[in-house]
Length: 143
Figure 1 (cartoon, rainbow, N blue to C red):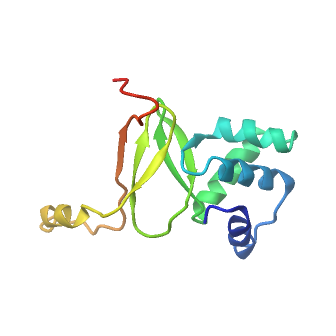
Figure 2: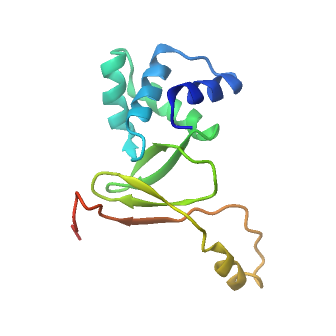
Figure 3: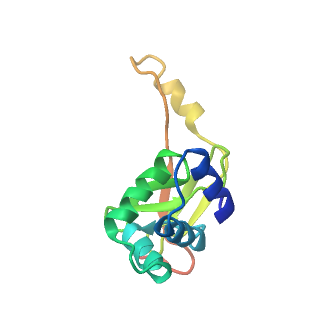
């Protein structure tokens, strides 16, 4: 789903218009495919394409994109929310660089083993997310 046309098609299918600001935000996310970026970084990139884009427009659109399943949202870089365009709809998890936000998909899921340990609890699991954090080769070890 990481190309612009596919993102636009999914938005149209969910009855969202393709405004110039929304297209600028989409292009910023597509350009940064494969790494998480902050809303502030999305804003800076979007303003290069459409100068009238403001922060509330970016954040509102990021919330829409998350709601319709176009982006992942998580927290790194000192707790700030960061976003990544979904590039693979199969079930997977991520390893994320705490320095630059680069992300890679981790195949497989360890949840089956964990499910055994919660069998006797009064919970029904509805969802999960596994994210591993560290530093890519370019950023090196920083902790």
